[in-house]
Image (cartoon, rainbow, N blue to C red; front, top):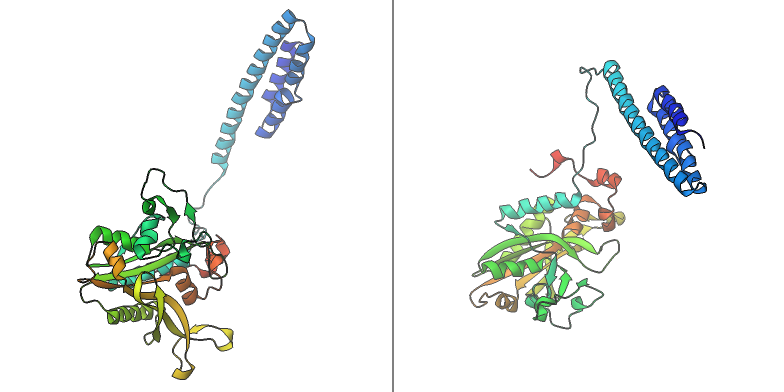
Length: 361
């Protein structure tokens, strides 16, 4: 076997001769790599007798450690010399203008949520929040959903494992909330009446196409007090929709509809035109030619819902409404596909996003 002392001298000389990090790395591979000189000698130990193998093994291990330490010391020295050279030669002209920096953009959904909070704050609503994972009581039962309602089916709702510690099935069954109406229940249970809130956040349903995604955002309003009626509801929605779409004489109509948690219930349409295949929210010059687009659902809070929250429906009544925040953003800002909002494409965000200085103040 090659003498360890001679090999050490050869490798030490190469390490000292390395004048940059690249050449030092080449020496390291030559010495300690898979096919390096020391590695080859280690492989030959198996051919030696027991005592000789022990002695030569100790010599090679000591050599390996010494060479590794020497390489590390040389590397630190070369890095320090390289840094000193950069500090001595590199300069910075502080009189030059700064390089341009890319600004981030506010997502249309975040922008819309800011707009909605501002509009409803001016109308006296406060913001309420609740958990994304709900129980059956707050998501369905307290909202007057009967046991066989389609919303309870597996294909429409994301059900989670039940809580084994909870004996009451209304609270044991867990779901990803299908609407922010569950927040209304929690707030009425907590604060009673009167109450005037909006609830906004993520909701989840098993659906996916151009206008539906498994996760989307909702905003819902609730106002419960004495002597509240449909006229208050309609006035609130007219003010809200006109302010959001920034159209003072925006035509609005209510059509009778059914929702388990309101009675009576209604769908709300806004005036639009579809000339040339392009959707435009506006009032038609001729009322007979006015076209309509459904944007939200609403109604007077069902007496059963008030009872479930501990509120006397003979003394208090109220109205509720709800709509998709993502859909409002699509309509106002001309976004054709809901799915693109959640694809994290920075090019899309640069096109549809908002500069920080252009957001709601």
